[in-house]
Image (cartoon, rainbow, N blue to C red; front, side, top):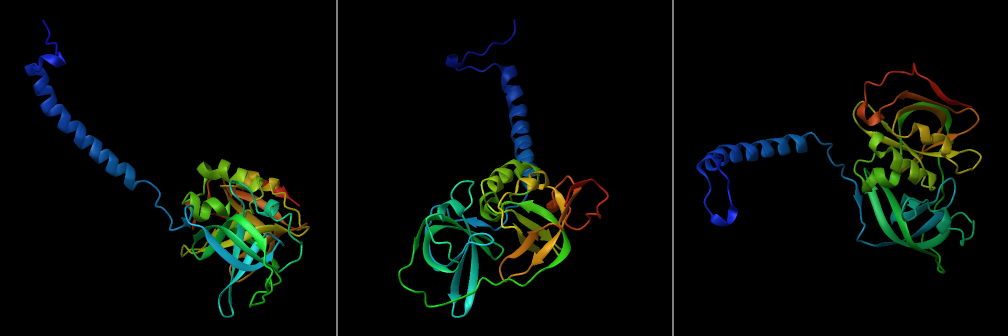
Length: 271
């Protein structure tokens, strides 16, 4: 008759004791080693931050073109451009409909900061026009651009800079498509051979906000030929009738920062 263990009798058969004395340590050691290997193989978190539980109030000049931004004076004569977004997966435009279309309007915004690698995004809670004049004045000036070709990966800045850490690649693609379709500006991330990243907000010469032609490019390594406008905090990649977009690798650029080869693949869209 085989051993049969009944818990309330409190007498463990000898065969069970032997099995547990060897099997349990082996199981625990295997579990520990597997956990260590699994954790070390994961992507490292970026140092991005989303201040979800902390509200920040900023006063500055609101510029709505080409994308909504708040220009603040960090210290005397030193300005910073903060990209504005709404809650959830929506851009800031719908929060600005009640405001004058005047560029440089003085406003006060309460919201939650998202920041990474020297760039800031503000998720708007509340926005109001300031009755008093600001103590500074600034222009929304970006250097006049030239057409050039750049390789990178298209991401949505809200997730990439602070929420998902990191928010790139195929896994992030569906989320990024929803964010960009909701009006959050698309950003092309370019990484050089030294691993330094440069960010280009994708805008359009005709002023339209429809980025649906980019959905198929998100999370992949892409090459875009467009007008590049350089600014202090953010650069712009302005699409126009001369722009060309190519997929050069189905995997995100972040996984191939250096070894990506020039395009031999399909032309996705050609204007």
